[in-house]
Amino acid sequence: MKKILFAASEGVPFVKTGGLADVVGSLPKCIDKQYFDVRVILPKYTCIKYEMKEKISFITNFYMDFNWQSVYVGIEEATVDGVHYYFIDNEHYFGGPKPYCDDPCYEIEKFAFFSKAVLSALPLIGFQPDIIHCHDWQTGLIPVYLKERFRGDLFFTSMKSIMTIHNLKFQGKWDVKTVQSITGLPDYYFTADKLEAYKDANLLKGGIVFADAVTTVSETYAEEIKTQFYGEGLDGLLRARSNDLRGIVNGIDYTDFNPTTDKYIVKQYDAVNFRKEKVKNKLALQDQLGLTKGENKMMIGLISRLTDQKGLDLVSYVMDELCQDDVQIVVLGTGEDRYENMFRHFDWKYQNKVSANITYSEELSHRIYAASDAFLMPSLFEPCGLSQLMSLRYGTLPIVRETGGLKDTVQPYNEFESTGTGFSFTNYNAHEMLRTIRYAEHIYYDKKREWNKMVDRAMAADFSWDVSAKKYQEMYDWLIG
Ligand code: GLC
Image (cartoon, rainbow, N blue to C red; front, side, top):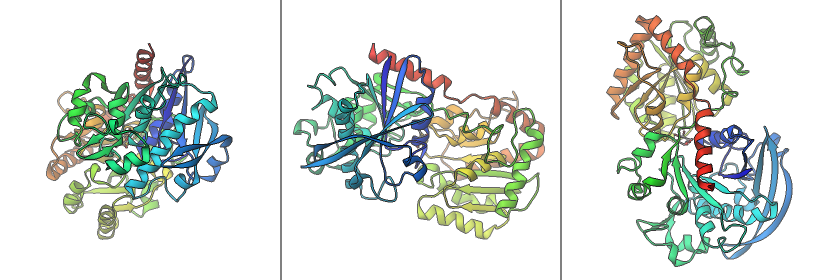
C-alpha cells in the first residue's frame, strides 16, 4: 500500500475560503483505496464549525523548537467519508475568527509553524507517507524542511514531496532576515536559486525548488505560468523546472454537485427532463430574491470570491450597458470592498434585474447554479476554476475568458458545427466580454433549440475526478518507483 499525505491550509468539510478547500476535500476520496492510503493534515482552527469540531479527537502532544521558543503542538484526528484527517493544534496560531489574517508576516510564521509541525508529528502518529503532497505556499516549507533538517533521520530519508500550485499569485513573501529567524533555516537556503526572490524570502519558491515534482491545476495554466504575464515573477524558475511541472485539471465532487439529488434546490432535474424542470428553480429564485418573475428572462449567475483575479473590473465597466438588455444578474460572494459595493450599487439601481448577495452561502450557491441559464466568469487568470464545472454539471452555460482552466474545460459554441458547451472570449476587454454575453443572449432568445442542445452537451461533459485522480496516481507511482 502506498501512503500519501495531503498537507494544506484548508479543506472541506472542515474549513473553506476558496477552491483549494474543495480540491483537498474531494480528491483524496477519489484516489484508488486498493493501492493508496491517502490521509490529509490540516491546521485545527478555532473557527472550524462546532459540528465538525465534535468529530475531532486528541491523539497526543509534544513541544517543538520554533521561532526561538518551545511551542505546543497537539495532534488530533478524525475520519469523515472514509478519509482519515489529522490536525495540528495550537490555539495561539490557529485561533481567531478566520483561518487567515491580514498580517503577511504573521501568516508566514503561522504556516512555517504548521509545516514544521507536520513533519515533526509524523513519527509520533506512526504514519510514514511515501509522498507528502503539498498545496500552495502555506505548505511550501515542507519540501524545504524535508531536504534540510529531517533528511538525516531515517524515518524521512526516502520521503518524497509534491508541490501543487493552486494560485501562483500568493507566494508567502517577507524579508529574508525575519523569515530566516522564524524558520531557523541556515544562510545557505536564502540565495536566488533557493528561497530568495527579488530580495525577499519566498515560501512557495522554496516549495517549487525543493519538491520532487511540481503540478498545477490545469494544462493551460501550467503553460501560462512559464510566461512573464502569468508567472508572477517566478516564470524563470518554472521554465527551469518545466520537466518536473505538469498540469492536471481539477474535478468536482459529483455527489455533492448533482442536480438529480441536490437537497438545496427546489426542483431536482436531470439531463433528460431539464427542459421542463430546470426553469422551476429559476422561478423560485426570482421569488426568493425579488426579481421580476418570468420563465423566459435570461438569468446570468456569478459566484466568486470578489477579487481582481476574477475579472470584475470588466463587469463593472459594462454593467450599465448590460442592464439595458433583457437579462437578470445574480451575484453571490464576498471580497474586496470596491467590488462588494459595486454590486450593491447595481442591485440598488436595477432592483428587479440585479440581485447582489454579498455573503457566503452553500445553499444559495446551489440554487443559483440550478436556476441560472448562463454563468459569467471573465477571469484575468484562472488556475483551474471550479464554478464553471459546477455550472456545466447543472446545465448552466459558462461564459468565460479563455485562460487557464477555463480554456481547458469550456468548449466554445460553434454554431456551424453545433458543438460547444459555453461561450468564450480571448482578450481582457470589457466590450469583448459584453459582445460575447450578447451573443449568448441571442442564442438563448432566438435559437432556443440550439441553446438546449448545448445544455445537453454541457450536462454530458465529465468533470468528475475519475480521469484526473488517475493522473495523480500515475505521478505517485512514478515518484515512488
Ligand atoms: C484557486 C484558484 C482556482 C482553482 C482552485 C483549486 O482557488 O484560483 O482557479 O480552481 O484554487 O485548485
